[in-house]
Length: 226
Image (cartoon, rainbow, N blue to C red; front, side, top):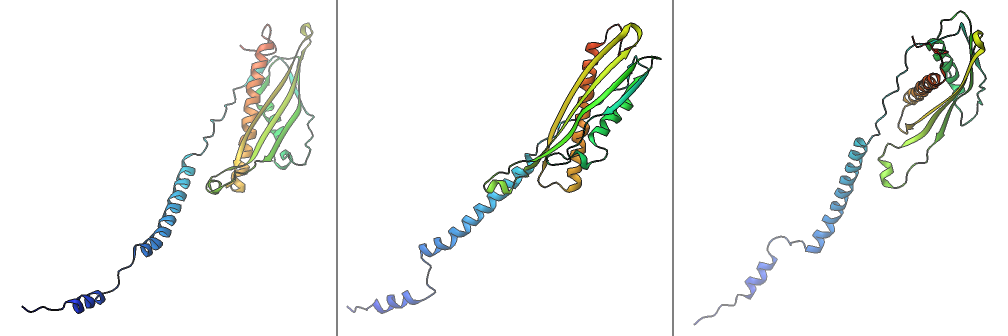
């Protein structure tokens, strides 16, 4: 019986073909790529969440119709003096909140009697703007955070007088409204938001005025409700 030595063939077989990479080398190559993919997916999720979680703006308050008053004339005095310094910014806008409040009175309050007077004194018509502290961490990089808080503060005193029976009534109307400006707003968009805040403040002033006027009206005066 003849025996063949196969060891040289086995040794040569080991040397044929390219060397196979080890498991450790494969892991070192694939794990960094997996980490990068995870970061990209996380960033995409944050961006998607940012786009779908924007704060809805409330519907603007409507201003009512004409208010018919039992007086012959209306005088409007603006006693508010803008500080012209931060955080006040009302002096930077025209028409100013005080002028817009005066315009509201001129267009809404309607005198129809042949005697009597209403004196409206504007005590406050301020527009205040303050910075809002930003968030921290990686999530803040993907959020459209609110950068500035803007608030309008309005106050007016209404003094009614009529010679018939020496009738008189006084109202002190106060209204305020605030909202924020996102940090990615353009200058034009920011100005639009400020003007909308002023308009909403005046609309709420209008509501409060009508409420108080109804509470002091007696025998169809000073408000003539028909």
